[in-house]
Length: 252
Image 1 (tube, rainbow, N blue to C red):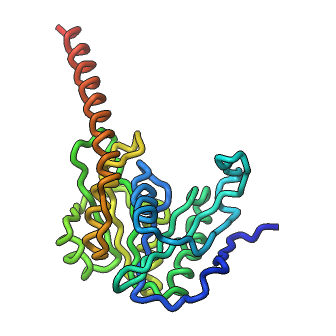
Image 2 (image 1 turned 180 degrees about the vertical axis):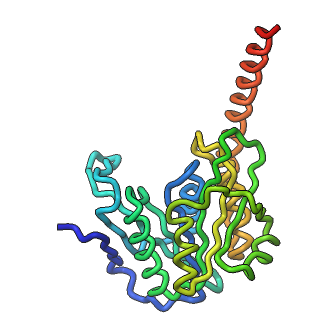
Image 3 (image 1 turned 30 degrees about the vertical axis):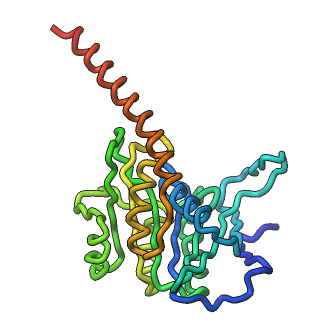
């Protein structure tokens, strides 16, 4: 029987004494913004996988790999050694399917952070605005007032009315529960329509995050994807405008 939540480190990961580590959480969410950023960074930096997380709180299904082999859904931990710090990445297939599971899995993520000596967490996500966005802002939230000046200086927008409904899932709970456990946490949210996978929003978040952690990441490939998506968005905006104009032509 599978455990409620199981965390397994790979045999190749033997040294948990990390240097000034930070944790970056990029689990699936609105516009897949956080997932895009974290997985892009893993790819570009060549981060190494060090662990897997399985849980009964993930959806009851299997993932079919490209070779046709099925596996259980999982979340994964990657590690990158920068010049003066380690970067721990939390990515994966899904978030929890239940409210209880969100809390329990977030607690498990914080156990990992504590075990690895993490003092700062960055959670990444999308902020759904319900319409197409040409120049997405990056909105922020922190779990300590004194963190705001640093985050604001990196180009993050703090708007007291946004996000009005709070931050759902691990991206938000890592702030709240992290604060209880004495871990500083920041959430970076790229504006996105919420209708599409949004590399434009991801590129905005990546630019801010790179400043905050002082680890340069070549944004070229993500910017190329964002440019392609911008063309798609422009086409959709023009279609919407044409549709509105046609509707107005029937009035009066």
